Amino acid sequence: MTTSLRTVPNRLSKTIHQTSKWGAKYKWGPQETETGMCRLSLSQEDKNVRDWFVKETKSLGCEVKIDQIGNIFAIYPGQKKGPPTGIGSHLDTQPTGGRYDGVLGVLAGLEVLRTFRDNNYTPQYPVAVVNWTNEEGARFPKSIMASSVWAGVSSLKDIYAIKSITDEKPVTVLEALESISYKGKTQANCNENPLKAHFELHIEQGPILEKETKKIGVVTSAQAYSWIGVNLKGRAQHTGTTPMDMRADPFLTAAKMTMAVNEIAERHLGLGSVAELHISPNVVNVIPKTAEFIIDIRHATDVGLENIENDIKRALENIVSDTEVILEFKRLFHNDAAHFDKSCIDIVQESASMIVGENKTIKMLSGAGHDSCSTTNANVPTAMIFIPSKGGISHNPTEYSSPEEIENGFKVLLNTIITYDAR
Ligand code: GLV
Ligand code: MN
Ligand code: MN
Ligand code: MN
Image 1 (cartoon, protein in one colour):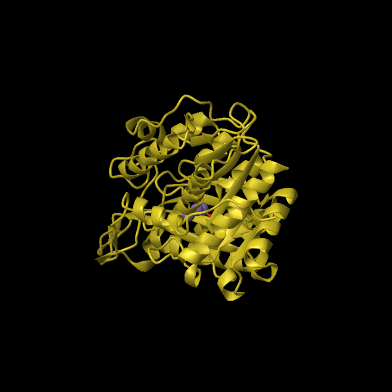
Image 2 (tube, rainbow, N blue to C red; image 1 turned 90 degrees about the vertical axis):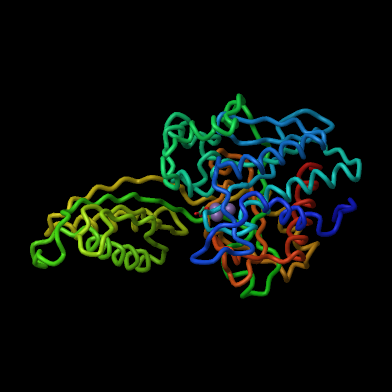
C-alpha cells in the first residue's frame, strides 16, 4: 500500500537548487555555466554543504555521527533501538559536474525525514541519512572511497595517504579531513557502526529510461569497474632535430594505448576510456619526457572485466616492447559487480509500480558505480532507484531531471523506507 503521509510538493527540488550555491559557478570551457557544479570532496564548498546538512538534520531531532573518514550519519530516532535503515549517497560532485548526481540521494533522504517530522511519524527503527565522503573519486582518485572503507574493502590507513590530483599543492585525504574538521570519532566500520539496509535514489546518468519512456528504474545490479594508473617515461628532445626513428615519445605511446583500450573493451562487450592525461613538458617543440594517464574499464560481469584488464596489460607491454619508452602501471581502484538484495529490490518494485504504474518501471543494471556497491559488499541488504536523466547526460553541467521525475523518485523512496521499516 502507498503511504498516507502528506508530502510537500517540490520541496526536494527547491532544496537541491538552494544548496547548489555551495560549489556553483565554475568555468566550463571558456564560459561560466548556470547549472555547473564543482563541489570537490573535502573542499571548502563541501564543508559548507556538510555544515548545513548537519544543522538541518539536528533541527529535525537527529543524532549526527561523523566517522573517521568523514562519512556523516544523521540518525532519526525510531520507536525501538537497533541499526538504522540507511538512505545514502554523496554531496560531492565532479569538477565539471551538474546538480543532481549524488546530491539527489542525500537530499531525498533529508526530505524523507522532513516528511516524518511534518506528519509526527516515528518509524519502528531509526532511519539514517548518510553522506558518503568522496564518492566521485575526482579530487582523490579512488571511486566510492569512504563507503568502501566503511565496508572494510579499503584500509583507513591507505586511504588517508591518498593525495589529491586537483590541487596545485597536493594534500592527503587525512590533511583535507582535518582542514575542514570532518575527521570524526565514530569508527569507519560497518560492524561498529552498522546499517540495517541501504537505499539510494540516484539519477540514471544514462539514456535507457528516456529511450524506453519509463519513469523509474528498479536497479538490480551495478557493473564491475577498475581504474589503472599508467606512467610512461620517454626522452625530452628537440622536435625539429630528432629523426622520427630516434625518438622515445611517451605521448605517441599513450595515443596507441588509448586506441588499444577502446578496442579491447569493445571486443569484450565492455567499456573503456582514458583520461587524466598529463604530459610534461607540454610544449610545442619539445618531445615530452613523461605521459601519465588513468584507464577506466567496466563490464557487467567480474570475469568480463578481468579479461579486459588482462588483455589491456598485455597490449600495453606489447606497445612499448620495441620502443625506449618505460612503462609502469598500477591498479588504483577496483570494484566487483554488485548484485542487490532480492527482497529490497522487490520492495522498490512494488513501491514504483504503485506510484508510477508497473508499465512505467523497468528492471535495469547500473552503468556507474555507487556507494550502494560498497554497502552490498558489506552484506547490507541494498537496492537503488533510478529516475531519468535528460538526454542521458551526466557528469556535465547540463545534467537534468525534472521536478516531476524527482518527485516520483522521492515518493518511491519514501514508500520503500516505510514498507521496509514496517516489515
Ligand atoms: C562512480 O561515480 C563511477 O565513476 O561510476
Ligand atoms: Mn553519483
Ligand atoms: Mn558521479
Ligand atoms: Mn558515481
